[in-house]
Every structure is written in C-alpha cells, then in structure tokens.
Length: 198
Image 1 (tube, one colour):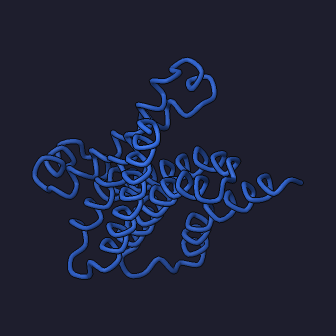
Image 2 (cartoon, helix red, strand yellow):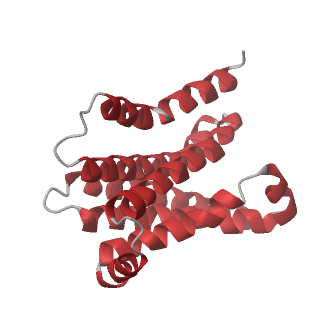
C-alpha cells in the first residue's frame, strides 16, 4: 500500500468520527438535554472544520512538494458538504418540521441563518461538479468555479461566529486559521507574479 493510499484511508476514517460520535450518543441516549441543538452544533462544527482543512491541502502540498496530497482535497470537500447537509437537514426537518413559511422567515430575518444558507448554496455547485466527469467537461472553468470554496469557508465561519451566543473563542480560531491560509495564498500569488516578471 502506497503512503498516499494509506493517508486517504486514514483521512476517510477520521472524517467519519463526528458522525460516528453522534450515532453512538444517539444510540446511548446521550445527546444532552437539547438534542436538536447539540446535533445542529456538532454537524456545523464538523462542516466548518473540514472546509478549513480542505483549504490546508494546497499550501501543505506546496510546502512539502508532495503533490499526491491533492488527492485528499475532493474527499475532504465532499465530507464538508455531507456535514453541511446534516446541519441543514437537522434545522429544516428535525427543528422546523419542514415548515417552509417559518424557514423562509428565518432566512430573511435572522442574519446568521441567511449567511448559513448562502454558504450551503455556495457548496452545492462544488459538490455537484466534484466528479471526474464534470472536471473533464468544465476544464479550466472547473478551477474557477471551485475557488468559491474560499468564499464558502469565509461565510461558514461568519455563520458560526454570528450563531454563537457568548463564547466566540472557537469561531475566532477558525477565522484566524482562514486569515493565515488566505495570507499564504496571497503570498504565493505575489511570488508567482514576481518570478514571471524576472
């Protein structure tokens, strides 16, 4: 087994841990006094975490020159979308009982839900076009489209920040991580332009 295959399998198993923990706690009846809120928070946390980790892949690949790491990015992105779907479905089906009128009202009147819905709509085309067939069909446009992941990660962190009631330490850490990642991308772009001019 090659190192990248082993890493992909370990990453796959690690990405399933939040879902496995939720399933185990549901089975043992240990979803706290407010299970809907607990599931909503845990699935949202996992989605944000995996989105940010997805953005770590390219800088790590460039710093280590291990180009095969890029194979992890699509899987991590799809797991982020998976948890975003669980997050949305918990709110829409379990919390709101699919009351469309109430949900629409929440989207328009509660900013953190508005930005959360924007995040999901940004992730949706990325998930749909993540297949090898779509990558071939879109060509260069695929890369342009998938730069939306930076916008989606930003809006996801904002959604998290606006949604917490008091303790903003965790969303602040994710915001800091995003700032570092954006700084790396900017530095790399400026360096590439400088090299092309020389």
